[in-house]
Image 1 (spheres, rainbow, N blue to C red):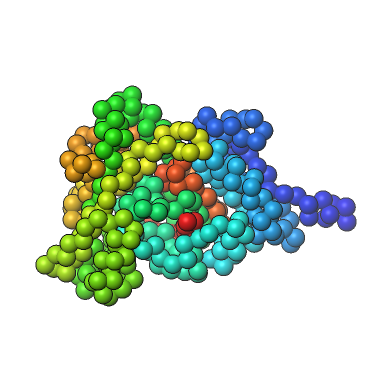
Image 2 (tube, rainbow, N blue to C red):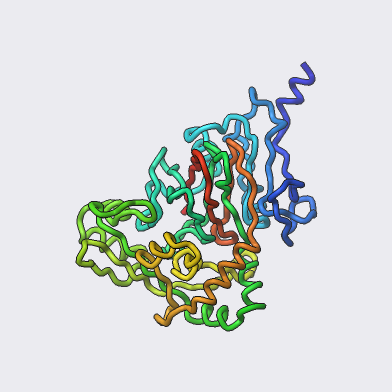
Length: 351
């Protein structure tokens, strides 16, 4: 009886710097004063499955999790009893008290499907595609503050969700290409994205404008595009909708840490980042572009250098079924590895 009572009181263990393949040490400091890792880990493996309530734990640890997220940039909740499907994932993350985006993100390009309230599938681009590192929806005027991911089905081969501290990109680029960083900080960045009409959209790389803006009316789509930071909408002869954004900052300073962040989607949306992949290059040139805020072009070699740095500096771990990954969308970028076999990662965005 005493052993059962002790098991019932076991809490998930916080590990600042797990000795696990794929966890990357960084300069942040965890609760214990130890060097922290990307991501930090809460391990629920020792919790009693019969008595542990993941949602209750989340509600009781909201402040602690927020503080640790700011230190690590991302947190992994592993082996939490009872977090096993979309409904229990939703119950767990909603217990943190966040204000979620409840519908499919308006104006977002990546193909995904609604699952349960704020929960949707992660981007469902072709499995052979590596989705480049990016901060989510930085081509919007109100990008999400945090992202939750949930592993419902682990791919048998690869399919990881790599993550990267944004300050590492700025630091490396300042050493290698200081003029690029200076111009990006001064001029900012603009994005151009083209949405095909539903009747011609293959939906492999990007949604149709009808789906992205949740309407079949051009006037409504235009209004919604303008509300999220689009400066100009052009309707093309084939029925596609081209959206050119206002100027956004390319380098931002985190108000919490004072660190400079590579807060943009250049490596995701600039065609030069896809030049080593024939299919990716074709689709990037067709759908996406990024320029400086003054409309001048961003040099291909600067984009390629930024892409290389993200791949060198990023880290990843193998998903386990039931894993929940919480990412601070300002501190950390994320990506998606190509994969084989079935894979289903769910996601939710916090306003």
